[in-house]
Amino acid sequence: MSDLPTLTVSAADPTPPYEQVRRQLATLIHGGALAVGTRLPPVRQLAGDLSLAVGTVARAYRELEAAGLLVTRRGGGTRVADAVPRATEVDTALRYAAEEYVTRARLAGAGDDAIVNALHAALGHSHGGSG
Figure 1 (cartoon, rainbow, N blue to C red):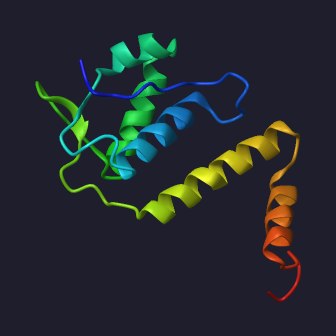
Figure 2: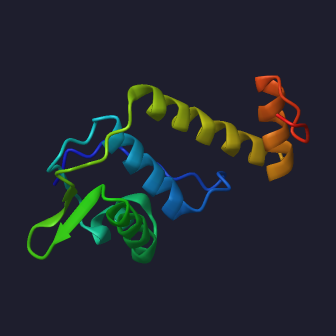
């Protein structure tokens, strides 16, 4: 199999399942939890493990390939790319915190404008102001 940490997909999360998978894998790759060359499970296997449609996992893998994080070779499976664009620890932490904030805000019923306004307020800026 692979050294893949446990992934989870939440039906309560308004984020589409393929994006939940893509985001978790990207975070694991950027954070170094999935090293260069680590082989990921085949699409069908991961789909079965997560109770998702094969196309859902395939889309997540395709988007990660397009971002340069994964490579798929016939007979070699899907692996973490050799030249992964690395995010700094701060970038990774900020991205994760932002994704969690947006998810929680959407679960609470907030729209994009309300989410952005709350972020600007937290930063001490007015959303409609000059900056």
